[in-house]
Structures are given as C-alpha cells and as structure tokens.
Image (cartoon, rainbow, N blue to C red; front, side, top):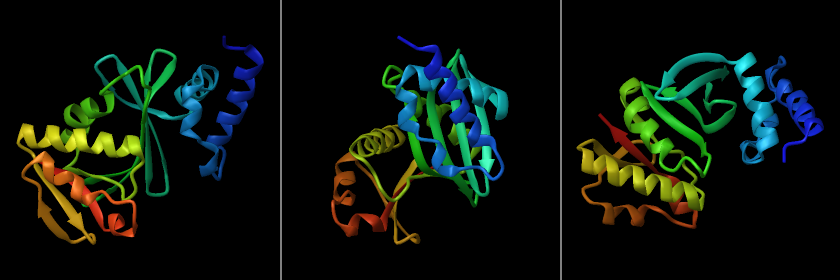
Amino acid sequence: MIKLKSIIDSINEAQMLFESPMRMGALNIDQFENHGDNFAYSKTIKEKASLIDKFKNYEIYQYVVSDKIFDVIINGDFTVAFFNYKVQDDFMIEEKVWQDPLYMSLCRMLIFEYYIKKFKGIISDGLHSFLGERYWKKLLKQSMESGYKTYVLKDEKDKIPLTSPEEIDQYFSNGSEGLRYRFVIEK
C-alpha cells in the first residue's frame, strides 16, 4: 500500500536532486524498488528532467551533472529502468544500471534497440555486482549472436576479441585482477 505521507516525504527528498549544486548521493536507485518512493521520484523526474525521447511505450528522461548522464526510463507513473553513464569518444561507458525486476530484459532491449544506435559502442564499468555480471554475460552473448564486435578492454588499451560466450568467465574475478578488464560491444 502506498501511503500519502511517504509519497510527500519522497517527493521532497527527490526534489533535492535538482537543487544547485545537485546532491549526487541523494539518488539511491534501490529506492526505486519501493513503490511509494518510485512514484515520488518518477513524478519529480517528469517535472525537473528533460524528456529526450520515447522508446516503445516508455519515456526517456535525462539530466546531466558534470560529465555524468542519467537516463530514467518511465512507464506511466513509475521508473522501470535507469542508466547512469559517461560518453567518451562516442562510446557509452556504463556506470550504473537498474531495471524493475518485472520488466525482464528491458535494459538489454534498450542497449540493442536504442543505445547502440546512438553511440559507436557500449563499455562496461569496472566493477560488477552478481546481477551486473549476469547482465553483462547476457549482453555479450547476445552481441556475439547478433554480429557485433565484442571484446575485452584490458588496462584501458589492449583489445582482446571475444569469440564465444565460454571465454567471458575468465575475465570475472573476485580479486583486483578483475579491475583490469572492461567489456565492449561495438557496431
């Protein structure tokens, strides 16, 4: 049940995002999983951020802070996905991605049907949660099946081509060695 007081409190908190200077720590994407907070943030995003595009039934709102871009994907009154990224040399460099668990594969669909058309390619961040690892394994497998150039960027410069999904696991590590690698999907 969504409580009005909770929504009002969340709206007040969400509006702090758009004060100057913006409080970067104020956006906690885990709060999108609470329906009251999600509704409040989505309402504020619709009022304060720029509607930059529509994708299928979704609206894509964007706000930019310094060199960080935040795309909030809204369906109706609720945020269903979120991309935080930078752009460098026409590549989208992901920093944080979230999707509502009820919208399975939405982020992958957005990557392949929206973002890959806007950018030269997509680069992963350097750290992956368990879900982030699953997300990137699925992205890489789909990109190989779709004919995109797929490789590992070692130490920000060496390109190691990926030719099969079985190769992906060797680049995930619980130690600092894993920080040397980023995954790349390129047109």
